[in-house]
Image 1 (cartoon, rainbow, N blue to C red):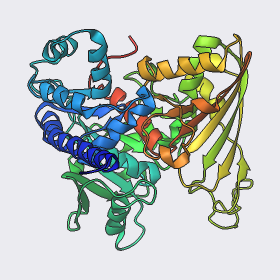
Image 2: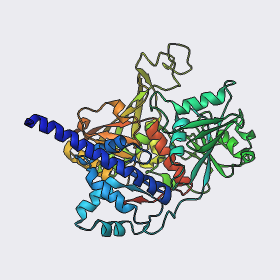
Image 3: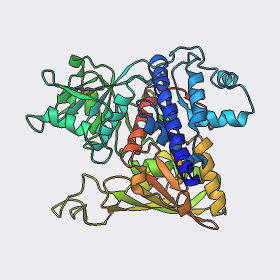
Image 4: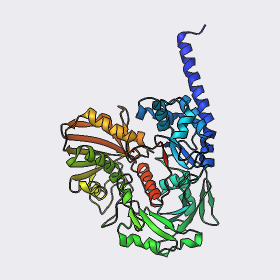
Length: 486
């Protein structure tokens, strides 16, 4: 006769086996929706396409960070099964939000609810996919390779964005193999999800079926993309070598290139765009646009929410930022102040223009924010500390409730996430797609003074923002369901 402890142990194991079986049953359904209907499914920004059963269960577990309870796969499996029977059109569907909306709707019949909620795409059978648009990555460093991973991962999705080429300076005779290896393996973000092959004869990398031509060039103006079948391309400049219109306009002299997106703060009158805040300012006439900096993307959405709800009189932003390739590994000459000292051994006080750059995306905050930065010996994930003097008094509880609600239901839910855990540290945010994550437990409020701690993956989270800008520039962002912030 088994003891109660043994029964409990067996029960826990059986529950895991049951959930694992349900996750395994969900995998082919997610694949069908993706391949046959151009539907990308996810849970609060965590994509479910091409994930293992364990990854799917981890995504369900992650939902407790948002909903304060684990998302039951026993509820989402029948929901996904029902989705496969609706002949849906191209879209992105958050099954966690959809499930929550169904549970609160009072509707008893799941099929009836889904037909009403997804009425715009029911019966469309994959229709609505944007026409293909060629993307070229000029530079293949940290951001370039992450953008490549994201674009390859979405090659079959509704966006229509096609990574056609990367442009680099040749560094060695085995340059192609080294570039492929850096795409395949990453010390921070882990291995590439899929297979990578080389076409050495034609100088290309084939990643999950995406054929990426590797072009060697020192001068962007002399590249002829049309000889590789590339036309009307958006060139994403990841080098940071040019940041003004004059320098970046060299890309437009290349045959086959039509627009440029800079993944660094733009100088002078270039539009610095933070998706979710001022991306609607981009017009068809804008041939060159900047996606601002990772820190500006982390700060601005939160600042926008705070200013609209409470009014910001003034404030200071201190950034605790992971080291970057701009710093020296060990002490050596560097033209920048303090950046010549070892990045792996020191906290390095340095300047940041991110606080002032907020005003380029959010003009109402011009002159209201100051900023500084401390580089620290971690390879990724940073934190912005916003010390704000507000025009209205509030409390910690009220402010956190507001920010959490906005992260779930507001227009900036893709940009601003919220977490309320006493155990999270920086590595827990590697790979997050939000521009910034508010740490609710760290919030400090004293009347009109509010201090917010905002985590951000300065590599992957920023890359996700860059992709959103690309989707907007090409009018290729798939319709998202359920629709929030309306």
